[in-house]
Image (cartoon, rainbow, N blue to C red; front, top):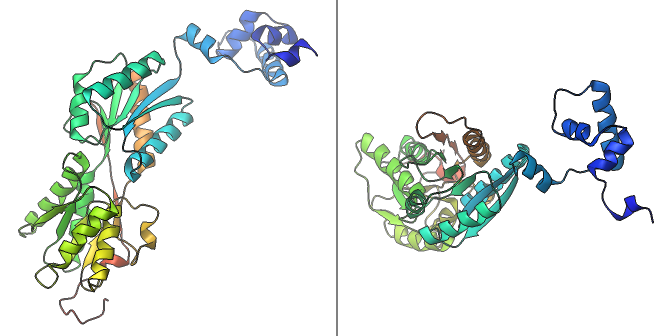
Amino acid sequence: MAQSQLRPPTMADVARLAGVSHQTVSRVLGDHPNVRDETRARVLHAIEEMGYRRNSSARALVTRRTRTLGVVASDTTLYGPASTLFALEEAARAEGYLVSTVSLRKLTVETLSEALDHLSEGGVEGVVAIAPQRSAVEALAELRHPFPVVTVGSGPGVGIPCVNVDQYMGARLATAHLLAAGHRTVWHLAGPEDWQEAADRAAGWRATLEEAGVEPPMSLRGDWSPLSGYRAGQELAGWVGRGLTAVFVANDQMALGVLRALREAGVRTPQDVAVVGFDDIPESEFFAPPLTTVRQDFSAVGKRSIALLLDLIEGRDPAGTPRFAIEPQLVVRASTFPYTADPGAAPT
């Protein structure tokens, strides 16, 4: 068997086939300008003919660049973090970077320190931390790291470069939609207390009601799961007929549980109670009824986060601590037909 069949082709093999020096092949691979077009074409043809692939470890030794980015994440079973992680990986690949991901059960000073050390040993050039919990951002702020770090989902009030969907605006869109439909007030099922996104959504709901001259009613709290939404929905059903006609739920999964609990209690949606969710998960348009919700553009979050991280890696530091907010979009479906004060009337 020929030697070329026993091992992958090397740069020296390419040089021999093209009739040039090893250094010339290296210049072509590095896109060096001082190479004649004819020579460059000959080398590229030899590379294609031999199926040569440059060794990434050798390239890193020469350029001191690994073209690898790190991602630290937790709660990736949830739709938001999982969608963010996928968007980051897709955006990094589009820029020619590999991604090394560390998934943690909980983001603490200790676990984050270990994760950053692990990624540093792997030679990553920068890290994106999906850190929606306030405690995670506080822990991250305490740590020193040898590379740039960008956070996602951490909210605007941090001293670390960040990219977020404007959760506050999304909640305002949802609440204003229900008020415009004729509801006198809007109840709220909030997310977990430590999540910045839950806090921002609750703040947007409250501010919209207060600006309309409406005293915010009691809010309930869930843990993002359909079960917590179901239990909250059972409680909410008891307030139907006593001022409850509309509910803004902090995510679609909890909204699914709310819808079932209301249905089991004989409460019609949207004729008796209108429901709005948040996230626009793929299943939301197939809920019964299809769910009005707030859509987050995770693809935009991924692209903006990777672009910001690469700017920091390349030394293109924006002034101050850069913060970017991606606008959400209200998606109106059948769970929020215009409200009528006549409980026996059909929705318009």
